Length: 240
Image 1 (cartoon, one colour):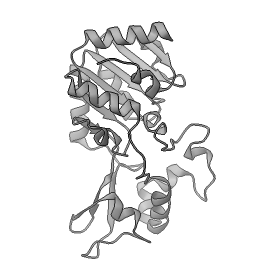
Image 2 (tube, helix red, strand yellow):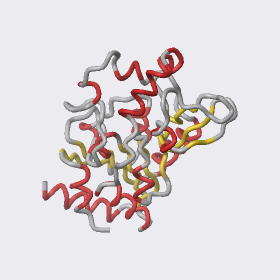
Image 3 (cartoon, one colour):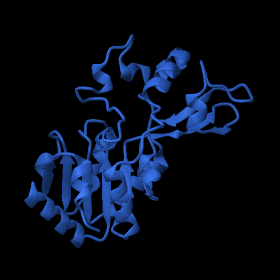
Image 4 (cartoon, helix red, strand yellow):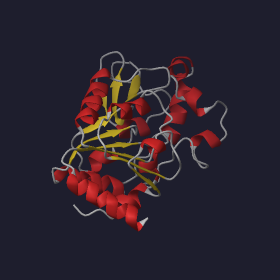
């Protein structure tokens, strides 16, 4: 592990345009549950599978039940940025990191100070009325009951990408461009199992592909440096 950390430090020192691509594992260290780990949402028991309750069709046909689950399991507003979020923000301030591409919807990267963040799956902090497009914050959603309703009477929907919905094209293009420009790509805290997000790493053409994750991923064989461990603990050792 020590040799891997030293090599990671050396690669970061030699790079000028780093992009970080992260998933749920980045936020689990802030106390936000993921989907696929032993304690994740997929291993808990509900009336419907989580992927069903977080689908567009379920939102349309079981709207109140959708919001009950969403408020209980997707809004973790007391969570704070951990060492990984903070180090990435520090790297950006130092001019080393060009962008963060995240599959998370919790806004912790921005809370830590990161400015250029491509949120592939949206954010719990943005919510809008489907009728008049008035914006609402996450606190409004958390403290609502039943179906969150705008002052105009419309339903307030989270600006998050549900199953069966497509990614925001502007966000997607921005992420692709950032990865294509990168001279180093650090992938962390993701199983690379969610598509099309996971396919974005294929746009990287450099020779500093670093993968930091607790478990194996489909990209392990392509990594120039593979570190199995805590993303927060690994990044916290990096000197900027």
